[in-house]
Image (cartoon, rainbow, N blue to C red):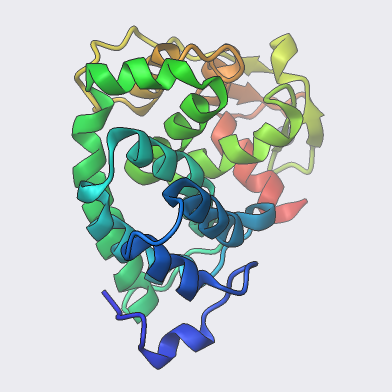
Amino acid sequence: MVKLDNPVWKTLHSAGNDVNKQLQALLEGDGDSYETIEALAEGLSHQLSWYSATAYVLPHLAALFPSLSKEEQMFLVGRMGAAIAAEADCPLTPGTEAHSEFCEGLDSLRRQITPLLTDAELHALLQEDEELGLMFCLGALAILGDRNHAYGLWYLSGSSWEEGPGACSCGWYDELLPLIEQPDCIQPAEIAAWDKQSLDEESVWLDGLLKAAGDEMVRPILPLLYGTGTCPDCGEQEPYWAWMNRYWEEC
Ligand SMILES: [Zn+2]
């Protein structure tokens, strides 16, 4: 963890100007914690971009986490999820200080969030605020699951999870596949019911957590996201996630 008075903070980027001050206020319990978390997360996830300050902020947030109420913890995970997921779009280089800070923060958050996912009190909280409940599920995916998948789900929030991109190596691509209409070119995966305990299968626990949060936006397209696409032009079959990644990389 790099202290807030270290000169490196002056070299870090965010979309807000005051990441340092916001983080300090949060750590010192100065001001409304929800407002500070909101402002901090906004500056670190603006337009779903990656900001270098995120890596250095995470260990501090992880250290603060145990002292927060369950509501604050849920809020923090939900609001910080997009900032963490954005690392998938701009991966850090192993061996660098930034990578080590990011991993330190993420590992600690992972350990602390895992028991929350199977906590009945948290499941009840998830239902109280539909939007925040959904954001918490996506944040949990960014921390515990595949960050590429989490980034994809935040990206699809721009179309309210109704349309998604795909591209095949043959050159075929579609910017707006109508996922909500269950297009023929994607064979949906079968997602088993979650036992509310196991975190072995990402699609299963994510679907189960979304269900616990009362989600009706993401769950309908989840079998497609974890499903298999068949290219309308060349017939090659690939996981839909691979289509989405190729679209980002090449289109
Ligand atoms: Zn093709």
